[in-house]
Amino acid sequence: MGKIAILVVDDEEVIRLGIQRVLEGDRFEVETCSSGHKAIERLQEKEYGLIITDLKMPGMDGLEVLKAVKALQPYIPVILITGYASVDTAVEAMKNGAAEYISKPFTPDNLLEKVDYALSQCAARLDKNDIVNDDDLPHGFHQFIGESKEMQKVYQRIMRVAATSSTVLISGESGTGKELTARAIHENSPRKDKPFVAVDCSSLAETLLESELFGHVKGSFTGALQAKTGLFKVADGGVLFLDEVSNISISTQAKLLRVLQERKITPIGGTQPEPIDIHLVAASNKNLKIMANEGTFREDLFFRLNIIPIELPPLRERKQDIPVLIRHFLKKYTEEIGKKIRGVAPDVQSFLENYSYPGNVRELENMIERAVVLAEGDIIRNEDLELWDDKKDTSSSSSLIDRIPMNSEELKEMKRHIRDHAIESLESLFVRNALERNNWNVTKAAEETGILRPNFQSMMKKLGISVKEHHWS
Image 1 (tube, one colour):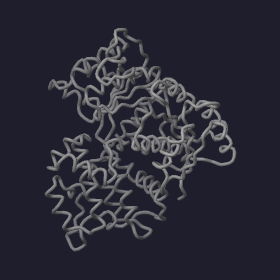
Image 2 (tube, rainbow, N blue to C red):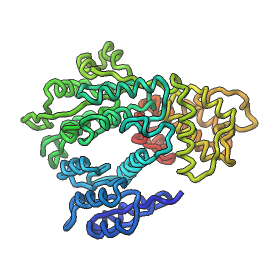
Image 3 (cartoon, helix red, strand yellow):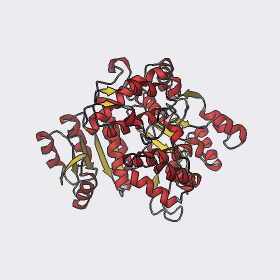
């Protein structure tokens, strides 16, 4: 599988070279140019997989580059680089077809996350070979794989709520597709040409979350060197998705309730409320009703959020979808990795169809990816899923999750008994499972497993695991 060609357009050489250094490698081939006019010339000569362009450039700016891309290569995703004061313009650009925007200054991880998201969105739109035919689903459903009765009910509920502005609460275990559901609501709604803004409430400290949501005025607190537009305002006219809303503190819950009641926000340090028009979609993998009864979540906020509930079924309750998911992920990773694998052995198929999947679709995807990487032949066999040494007891078909170590001592012991090439897979399962159990909170996962937080973070870095990677959340 060839590299994806990326064109970077920026009048600042340091930005162009910095992006090129981050992205250039096995996956991407990166070209750069210093102006919008030169970018248009390149677009007329060559096809690209992604365009990254600065918004503010002399001569032809990023918006004009975007318009040209949509005319010349309409399916190519465009990421806009924007300064702090240009967020509103970037949001306007997204209404006109930009896939994403990234604000300066940004980190390599920020950039890679945006690139992967833009490319995944493009691939989902272009892939005509998914298990479900494109003609069978409305716009925005093509990332869902599944034809079971349980998923059909979800699709119907999405279509009904998409036509309204009623607040939605999506519930379901980790890995069931809560963000995909929120995006499907947006893409099938009258707001589809307006922004979709996702906020992971579990990854931000309380003070930072308030600033992100409501914004702040210059000088409102130490470090507030300039005004910040809150995400409520960025999402104005569109959909705001609050993921893992159960992690919001009681004080922030009170402010969120006030916003939902008044449909106005006041930035931190501000005095003048600003009207907003958003469709709020919230999600949680915890039972908010139980939390409300226990006093750990405001009952009035729960009722305000739970106007239209959508409950996503765990994979073990829609097992008829497992075979199509296996085929989908097998196709995806054989193409990505560049292997020719015809299918899975009958005993592996049987195991996968009867496994309980505590990590749901995300866990199945990870298992197929690992098996494709480890497979030496053109068929996925039992040993491609197996972590234990062949001399150990492997006759049992007990679930792989039972063999994932729960703490550092169990990890050390199990590593003594597995093949060398499987150690990284075991460590990856150990880290991911610990994060899953603790809602992707690194501090809690480290404490539970008995590993110092810096050491746990080092393991995550070595394994390429980021708290932002769980796209099936």
